Length: 413
Image (cartoon, rainbow, N blue to C red; front, side):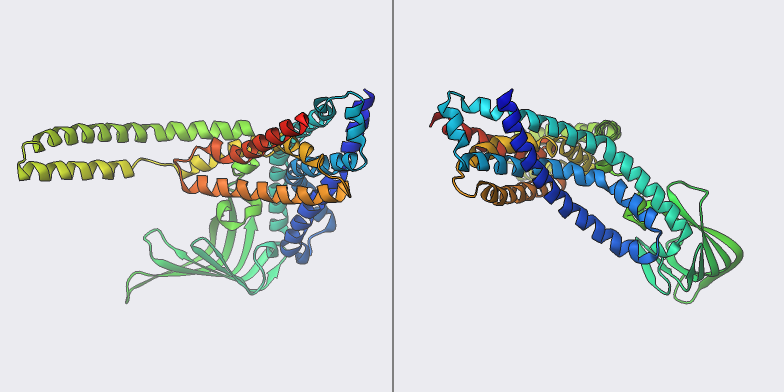
C-alpha cells in the first residue's frame, strides 16, 4: 500500500498538471468559437457561462486520455531521473508491481472519460441546443446579422435592421416546389417558438413573392402573413439535431440497427441480381469455349455487366459514419490504457529533467495519435469497405503493441 500511495500520488500530481494543460487548450479553442459567434452579439453573461458549461463534457472527454499519457511520462520520468525506480528494483520490487498503480489509475480514468463522453456529452449538447434556441428567439442577430446576406444550403436570407425578436425589410431567395427560383420579401419578420421542433419558423408580414417560370414568364403573389420554415440541419451547428458524436453509445447502436434494417432489402436485391449475373456469365463463358465470335462477345458483355453490378453495391454512407463514431466512443476513452503501456517504459529512459522531457515526448505522442485517428476516420468515411472497428482502434493497437514490446525489453534489463 505504501508503494501504491507513493507511485499513485506521483502520477496523480503529474496527471493534474497535464490534464490542466490539455483542458486549457481545448477550453480556449471553445471560448474563441463562442467569442466569435455569441459574445460579440450582446448575449447576457450568465447565458454565455451556461453555454460554456454545457460545452465542458467534450473537453473533459478528450483531456483525460491525453492527460493520462503525459502524466505517466512526467511521473515516471521524475522517478527515473531521481533514481527512485532503480532503488525500488534494487529493493526486490519487480517492474510490473511498480507499474500496477499507474495501470489501475489509467483504467479508472478511462472509465471516467467514457462516462463523460457517453452520458454528460449528449446531455450537455441537448442543453446547449435548447439554450441557444432560446437566445436565438430573443436575439435573432445571433444568426441573422443586420444588413447582411447569409446562405443556408439552397436558401439565401437578406436582412435589414434587426431588433430584439424582430427583423425589418427581410428577403428570402430560394427554390419553389416546381424547381423555379423564387424571391420572397416582407416588411417585417419574427422568429416563432411554436411549430415544428426540427425547424426554425419565421412569420413574415406584408409578403410579396415572385418566381421565374421561364425566360419571359413570372408568377407573382401577395399575402398579409406567411410562415416560412428553415430546417435546423441547415441553419446552425449549435442547434442541429444531435449527430452520432453527441449521442450515447446505446442510442448510436440503435440508430445503426435501424439503418441496417432499412438497407437490408436493397442488399438482398443486389445479391439476387449479382447471383443471376454470375450464373449468366458462367453459362455464356461455357458457350464461348467453342470459339464462336458471337458467343465470345456475349460472354464479354456478361462479364462487364457483372463488374457493373459489383460497383453498384448499395451503400449507406451515413451508416458507415455512425459505425465509426460508435467505435470512436470507446477507442478514445480507452486510449489511456494503450498510452500507459507505452508511456511507462519510455519514462524509464529519462535520466535528466524527467518531467520536462516526459512532457515533450507526451505532446509528440498525443499529436501522432490524433493524426492517426483523424486519418482513420477520414479513410473509413471515404471507403465504406474499410472495417470501422479497425479504422478507429488501429491507433490504440499500434501504441499498445509498441508499449508492450518496449515494456518487456525494459523489464528484462
